[in-house]
Amino acid sequence: MRDPDFRQPAADGRDNVPHVVMPWLVRLRWASVAALAAAGWAAVTFWNVQLPVGPLLALLATLAATNAALAFQLRSPVPSRIGIGIALVVDVTILTAILYLAGGPINPFSVIYLVDITVAAVALGPHWALGLALVANAAYGGTFLRNQPLEMSHDASDGMLALHLYGMWVALAAASLLIAYFVGRVSGALEQRERELADARAATARSERLAALLSLGAGAAHELATPLSTIRTAAGELDRTLGTGAADSLPARYVGVIRHEVDRCTSVLDQLSGRASEQSASDLVVALPELLGDVQRRLGPPLAERLDVTLPEAPRSVAAPAEPLRQALVALLRNAFDASGPAQRVGLRVSQDQGFRVEIVDHGRGMDAAESARVGEPFVSTKPPGSGLGLGLFLARSFAAQMGGSLTWSSAPGQGTSVVLDLPSR
Image (cartoon, rainbow, N blue to C red; front, side, top):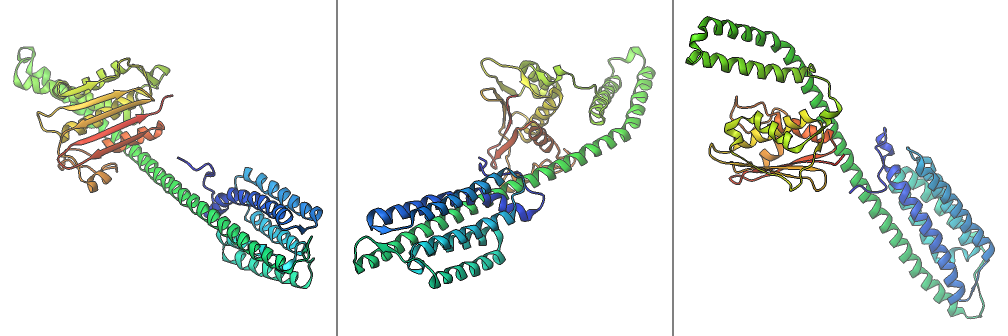
């Protein structure tokens, strides 16, 4: 499942980190507002510390207002690195002002400086982190020179010491939890983003290979049209030479086979070169029984008789381009039959619970992990040389991806192969 903070990849890879960090920084600053307010309330309620409530509330309101402005930047397609840096400088400034109003260096919440420095290191790099560390140290050093000391409602020196020690504990816990949470979530989001980018690059590479194959197919259609026309003409002349009396002879039957296969090749080349008729609205929806009937006819009687078909109880029409879907199913079924023995059967199970799913199961030799990882690439085949081009699985997967679906397979040596084509409902 995609992370809700994921956005489309930026054109510049350097902007990847701000894209991921910005949402978590906004949440971290809201948490800081709540934590500082809670710490002030606890100091007044439990330790009877007298704090300048008005100025402190004004500082927290300023922090909240700047965070609201930063949250507005989330709508930008390219979050600004400068915006993150300014927000961190504002955080250091407000924290310094709070320390000034609440005891100066004796206030244990100075450890919160480390949270901002950590965010700068993760989001903006070492130079920003070093610069912010210098600013934070200089600001904290200034509180030694000027500050408003803490005042307690009762005169007890040990009370101030206890307050400082407990405050150090609470501040350390808050800082460590914020750092651990922020760094952990940002690291996870960055890893997911890298996976998304890797998947996008792989999909782009597949699209480029598919475009190259289509261009190659169009060129092949153009080059093969002439020899196929010559073969058709020669077959017709040979048929006339044999005469009507030899219609049942072996040479005449061979001529019939030649003409049938030439017509089949011409039909395939028409589809590759784009001379097939334009798709109409009816071509985008096909009845399931009609689809499977066409697939079985293309397989031919010997293979169709070895096919075990399982349909849903109430089959519905399939919302997909009819011809590419037929070609994908025929290619997958031919692969299954080629992997099976001459007497083995192949199963085809269709379900339409959510979208359209076809599972094709054979009981052939199967594939090991290395073969299974490679067969989806173009021109990679497990068949003997000369038995196939290694394009069927690649083209079927490309069709599934174009339709927003998927093509997956699982296999083991000696246990056959299962191929699942999933298409979403449209």
